[in-house]
Image 1 (tube, rainbow, N blue to C red):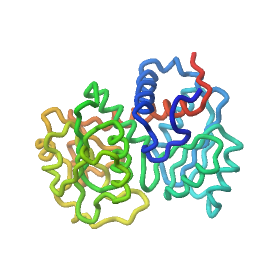
Image 2 (image 1 turned 90 degrees about the horizontal axis):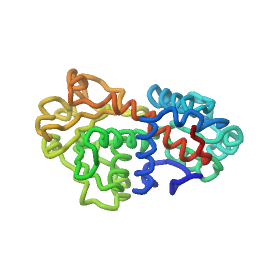
Image 3 (image 1 turned 180 degrees about the vertical axis):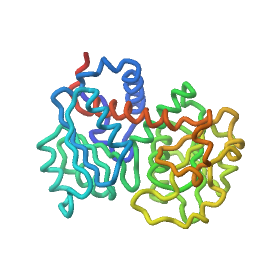
Image 4 (image 1 turned 30 degrees about the horizontal axis):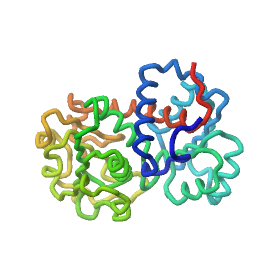
Length: 302
């Protein structure tokens, strides 16, 4: 039986504290005891819809499904064309037990949810990337043992990574600092969703933003599907060893990848001992396993 308070994952805002703890607990158990879940998705078919190109998301979801004994159907690129989302989902739901979608407009996913009888998981949209944020929070738990009293700084372009981080961190009480250049500040409609603004603080200066922080996070300066922003507006926003020196002594470096070394992050930092970027990418598979496992309904384990 399903033991989450939501049927579909869109932004991360729908996740309660109890939901979060449940997802983390199962993801951690899956990482330690993978064989226990080898048949968890037996006889289940999951549709993977990728309107945006994908490597990490596609591979991690595919691996998650296969390792749990499930089957997958993929649709890549412009297969939906001009079909309305409500028509598309009412056809697709007849062939699968869940839909994982990576697309552009959040309104498309919202419309699908209104008509869908099967769970829908947002695997990245223009505004949100909740699966990545869950993987990031699992990584923080693994590194620090607990999320209590942690503080994370996000530096760079305000995008779907920052937005889902703000929403989920606000739910669980994680403090977030952010520093984004002029013209790339967070959308006010995202900030308006936050229940506790006291644990979120914006800065103009990245060095001020990272002070007292346990993790420093960045992403590419131009997200997929958006017009390139003049790179000179990001001057001073590169995450490098100098910037990391302003954070706490044991602070970690985070990035969802793909990354452009020499731009948002220095050439050497991703390979430094403070970097946990490959741990983040591995954890994508486990949080996505947990989501699929819980949302499918029939909890089958060995």
